[in-house]
Image (tube, rainbow, N blue to C red; front, side):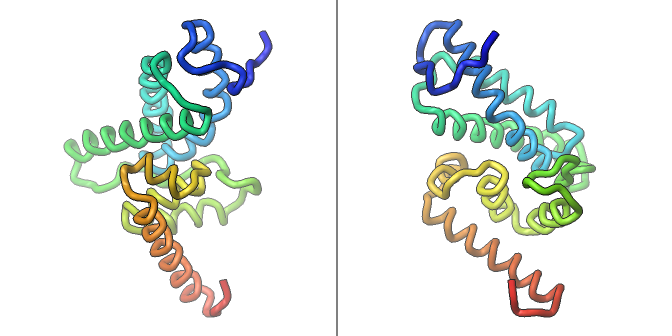
Length: 183
């Protein structure tokens, strides 16, 4: 069976067409989705949360209208909601603020794997929650500020301000760590 390119199938088509579209979209989105979820909920449960996301996506795919970029935003918005639900349930059962293993990645999330990748994610996760979320969606999700705004329910201007503050805080930390003023 050959892989059908996602842009070759119109959304809102018959069930077989929708299934082919979802399968193709799954192949193009899943790795980034799991990396995002590993950073947000921890590697131990990321696959379970991703499964919940895909169940919801498949359930609603027939009614979805939009292009591939809108579909990707919809999948990540669904993932964000499932991650928030998971964290709420987890926090209700525990005193600890973060689940064990959260914010650690066992796969590289940039092209060149290394210790710097895990260190970068660890630094990002030390930011306030809104800043960490925006930076992760921009980096791991590859979304624009406008797309992150749609996913998180914020305005694009708010996303840009949050991102600016996050990057400024990371830059301050880097300057303080290596003692130089260069970034």
